[in-house]
Image (cartoon, rainbow, N blue to C red; front, side, top):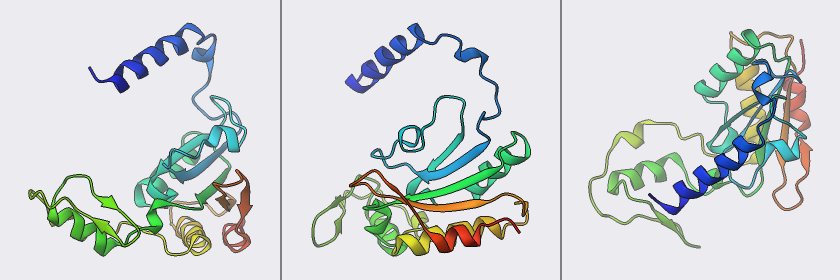
Length: 193
């Protein structure tokens, strides 16, 4: 058993010991909103948005992008669990800004091993056993944070399964200060209408 597994199991035992009445939390989020944000380990939506367990849905993926699966989750959050507002929150210094769809496809075609990066570019181990499947995926990389937030809010807003009465707000989390900075054009695109 790895050290990480041991640490997780020990942390869970401590959590269980103090679980209290959390089993009484209802399935719908108490504050009736959802956040779509990045999987980056530096982001803690519970802290930056003041959440407690049971407050909100938090959907995380690479870049916090409005992929088909993220939109599926948001629609379920609204249709079945009653959320009434959505936030799209990207962040500064995002790893999705460090490569392109073409770079990812090339790295995967070289090998399935973990790649490395330095000041010049990404490098693969070239260990073989690669796949060309990565060339056929839009990795939803980011070249401009404000533009990507706007694009994601627009993609959600324009989806036929998203009702017009749900406001969608766009923000960028600053990894250096912890502040949420509104992307006004995105919030405007996500307004009720």
